Image 1 (tube, rainbow, N blue to C red):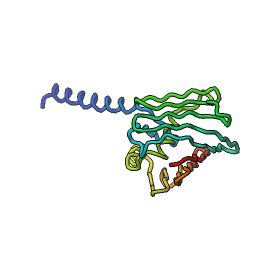
Image 2: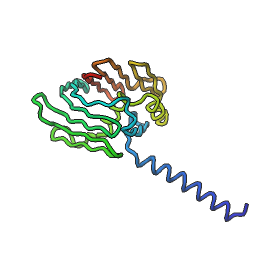
Image 3: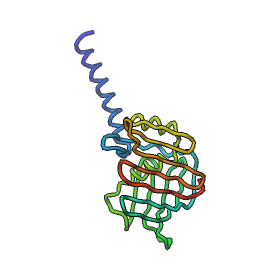
Image 4: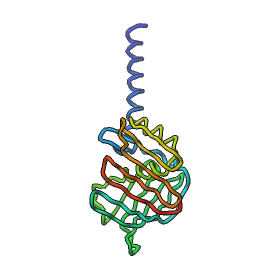
Amino acid sequence: MNCKKTALLFIICLCSCASKAAIRENRLFAYLTDTSKYFLLPPESIEQSMDMIQRIAASYGSREFLLNAWVKADKTGMDITLLNELGATIGELSYRDGAVSFSSPVFPKSLKPEYIVADFQLCFYDILLLKQALEDSGLSFEYTETNRRIIQGKTVIIEIEKKSNSVRLVNHLRGYAYTLEGEF
């Protein structure tokens, strides 16, 4: 093979790899650890559709929060409306068509909605697709019918316990937890 053909082949391979990396980098993601980038799965990866009110009890450090959420999630996307105890809207999140948006007069502007979507996916998305996405990010995924564990090395960083009327997520690495109550 002459030098021109070798150079052309090298450039084509380089561009091909670079374009695949660029496509992957343009996808939405959340860091599950300081170095593990979890790329959000598409909405059609949800296990089963939901359209329900959920009660959320969350804790971060010594702070505790109670609120309600109307969650509509299916293969086309996800919409969450956060409500205070009086039923007033305090935040709205949408994830569809490869984009995520969040608006709230209450929550800080620095809150990245990709992290909310990632936690939702860890709780409610297809196990095999999650396993592949987590392995692609350098993490391990163990699961049973009622429990899910995300592991970095030998350390459990996230645990999820699912029951018929509640889901409990504990993020050991980031120091927060929440319980969702609904008819799952």
